[in-house]
Length: 318
Image (tube, rainbow, N blue to C red; front, side, top):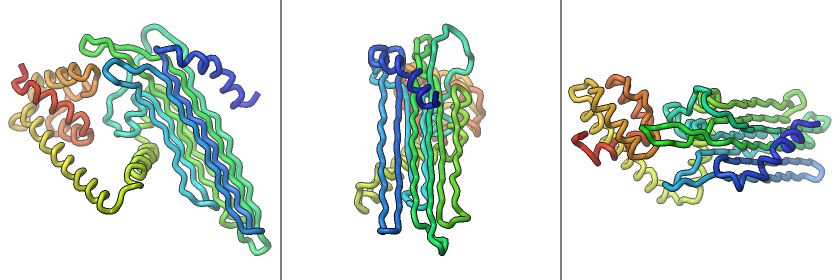
């Protein structure tokens, strides 16, 4: 039995129950890409098909378990590159925001439930060459399926029960080339990870984050005129200046005179997480000195905004 058949066989009962189960999250992607080039008659054909699906609980405060997936190609027909990434939970947040995003649980404690995560990939390349060595025909086939069905866990954050969506990460980076007979090649780099390993990979693998950041930036600005693009850049600079000002006020509050006041910092982090109903300000911030704290916060402007909002709501800290 092939890997693909085994994966779909295992996943079938999970897929059937996903929509009726509010305690689990189903996340699926299915991608097919085909490229065919002929010199007689001269022609090039490209086909692309992708399906993405998510089924999971929506919480009363509007929150959803975090997932992220992307597919990027370089658009070339004779030396195509395909990069695909799939991540859930804390690994998904780290993939799009960086290594300082909050971590998921690392201890394997409490009740156990079955979780499933699988990928299946098929890649094929065929090239033909004329007597002079130039490419005469080229066919590339690429198909990949990813599916996860993961029961939610739970933990306590400041006495509040909070659901936790475990981390998985699947990544494949494929490059095919047929620019010459001797230079024909097909290379593949693939990652498959779960739990803490998935979070570390998402945080430290530059190609994973660059894939998401590049796709997001291109998708958001593709339809903008040059005037609109300039306006977006100006607004971004204005937002950055605001964040810098907020960071300065936070540091002045928790580290007056350049030395962190542990009580003020701890209280602010606790108030921030209580206000959000989840851990948005990592607990390990409490052990940093002023320079370390500024550096950490400077790399995570979302946390800066959350800390500033909590501080503004209760500037006296009482």
